[in-house]
Image (cartoon, rainbow, N blue to C red; front, side, top):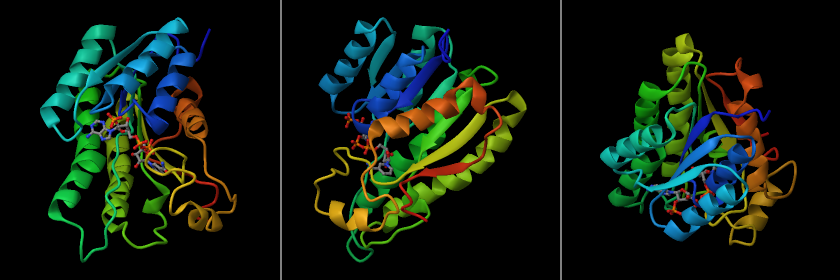
Length: 246
Ligand code: NDP
C-alpha cells in the first residue's frame, strides 16, 4: 500500500510552482488532495485533472489566503468533501520586493496577510478538524536564516515569523500526535523566482550547490514529513536550500 493511502491533504496555494508539485506528489503517494488558488483557475484545474487521470482524488477550491473567512470555508469544504483531514501544507506565499524606505503599506500588509496570517488561520481551522497523528507543514524560506540582498526585509520578516509559529504550534498539537514543521527552501525555479531571472546568477554564487532547486525536490521532502516515518520530527525549521544559508 502507498504511504499516504486513505489520507486527506489540504494544500493552501497548490495551483503552480512548489505547491502544485506538492499536490502531485502527495496524490502519487495515495492522498486525496484539496488545493486552493486565488487567480489561476486553469492551472489549479490542470493539477486536479492530472491527479484524477492517474486514478487519484483531487479538488480545487478558489480561496484568497488574505481572506480569513474564505480560507476557513475552504478548509471546511475539503473536510466535507473528503470526510476527514490528515495533512495541511501552507504553501501560498508572495514576495513584494522593496527597500525599507520604499515598500508601501499595502505591500507590507499583503505580505503579512498571505505569508503569515493565512498560515495561522488555516492551521487553526485545520487543527479543529484534523485526525490525531496529523501533519502540518509550512513552506517558509531560507531567507529566515540568511537575507543576503536588499529589498527583501518584509519577506524575510514574514518567513521568520513562521519559525516561532512552528515551535508554538508543535507544543499545542503535540499531545494529539500532530507534528508541525517549517520547510525552508532556497531558490527554486518557479514563476516567483525563475532560474533565468534577473537575480538568478547572483543567487547561485551564494550557494554550496550552485544551482536552483526543483519543485519536485521540495515536494519529496514535504512528502517525507507528511508520511508515517516522520512522527518524531516536530517544531523544526528545516532548510532545503543547496547550502544557501551555510
Ligand atoms: P509561485 O508564485 O510560483 O506560486 C504561488 C502559489 O501560491 C500559487 O499556487 C498561487 O495561486 C498561490 N497563492 C499566492 N497568493 C495566494 C493567495 N492570496 N491566496 C491563495 N493562493 C495564493 O510561488 P512558489 O511556488 O515559488 O512559492 C511557493 C512558496 O514557497 C511560497 O510560500 C514562497 O514564499 C516559498 N518559497 C519559494 C522560493 C522560490 O525560490 N521559489 C524560495 C523559498 C520559499 P495562484 O496561481 O492562483 O496565483
